[in-house]
Each structure stands twice: as structure tokens, then as C-alpha cells.
Image (cartoon, rainbow, N blue to C red; front, side, top):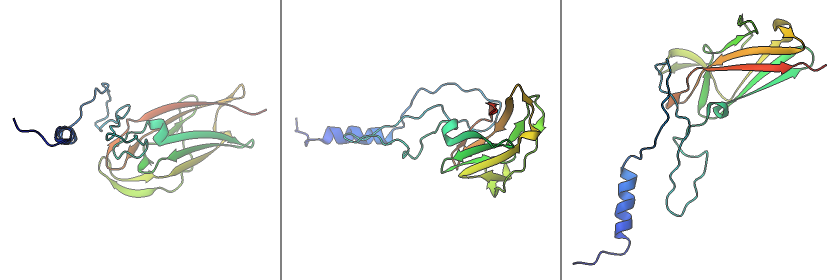
Length: 177
């Protein structure tokens, strides 16, 4: 029997691993949306002897609240600011954004200008990159016992990869005295 060169088996095994798709168990997600749904998490496989670096893997899937981080601020006694910080490579759809008062009635805030794009899922549409800030006068909102309840609906995507299902959030804030 002929001796194999040192490391040949390791190189053959590594090449087979790199050329074969890796299968990971994924949760079953049900959505009425015909769009591809982002998985709940991503797995990172590092080369031997290297440390995985989070945030730099090309196909890493960010959780929706990381991709579109929302903060709310009551500014003075007049306005509520809603601010989304949108990760690079991600965007929010302007026409998928809806704000609802405590009784579920739509609010019509002044929205900042958005970028016109040809979207592979929705055709000609408008999107927000980097940040989206909406200023709502408190006078438009229902205030009960010093509290504001606001419903939010929005949807966003990772550029040329996938779209998140439509998101629904409830924001509850207590006004300063």
C-alpha cells in the first residue's frame, strides 16, 4: 500500500466540506406573505484555526430588531419621535409603514423623502436606508392616564437577499410630568 502525503486526507476532507452544502435545522415559519422569510438565526462555520467574526459573514441574517432598531423619544411637551436605525445593506419600505392610534385608527404623519427603487418583490417603490425619523405631534395621539399607546406596522428587506415578514409592534410610553 502506498503512503499518502502528510495532510492529504485533511485537504480532501476540507475540500469536500467546502463544496458540499451545509444543512442546518431551521424552524418552520408560517407566513401569509409570498416573500422569502429570513431565518431566525444564522450559523457561522470558521476555517480551522480562525475565530468567527460576527457581523462580517456575507449571508448572516440579522434579527429584525437589530436590522431595524427602533427608539422612541418624547421631545419636550409637544412631539413623539420614532427613529429607526437601519443597518447597512437593509431598507424599510415607505408604503409598508403604518402608524395606528390606541383605537387602531391610522395616523398620517409627515414622512421624510425616500429613495425611489425598482424592487424585485414590489416593483417601483420607495425605501429608507440608514435612518428613518418620524415626528408625531402629541396632539394627534390619544393620551389616557398620562400614557400613549401607538401601533406600528412596517416591513423591510436585506438588499438582494430576503425580506422580513411584516412587523407589528405596540409602543407604550408614559409622558413626563
